[in-house]
Image (tube, rainbow, N blue to C red; front, side, top):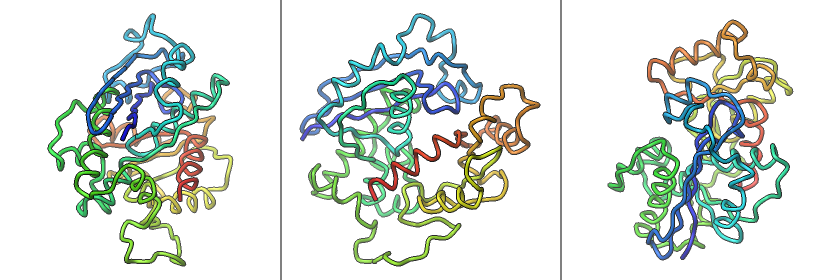
Length: 291
């Protein structure tokens, strides 16, 4: 049994703005190789992201750019199984590859959050974030360091394999099945409360700015992958999708009231991830690809 776990940190809401990569290779449940690197994202650093991971412009001065580490990344991932906790890391890698017009990496992706939702009953509908799952399995790590998070994602999968008795191949099949196999969800209507079997069930999403697609269509897409869609930003919001053109506006006065409110809540400790519309579409695409 061999797989590589990955985690990335980003400089801002653009998911291609990777500023750190961590990789951990496991063989038969044992960590056999690890690699990490700071990355110059060739982009600005948002204070929100700096507060999360502690990496800023000065830290990446002289660091390699994404194309410079791509060969190392490909060597780890090509032809194997890559584990990430939720698909955010997968999308970030995909967006960075597109940004630099690089060749895609031939790897099989496995979401350890989907594994956790099926392995532990307490994580089925909530509490399947990496930090909480690691508390359940008794694994301590430094959250929001790319290498630490990558190793933690690998440990979640290893713990799930031990708990369930399912091997790696079986888990690749299991994550595409309903959380509760005895309860059929076929024919169930997907509503704005979010598909309970969806990739991001439990997330509360709001939209702001000029979107390429109608808000109604965007809301339907969000609900299809499990998100509750709310009209505004509140303390319950966990994801804010901003129009691609709006995300490039760095002046606070240019940002929408929802955007500014989200930043204010983040500053007070609320966990809200801000992403641009094209990254949201990629998240939906990746989630539907494994459904």
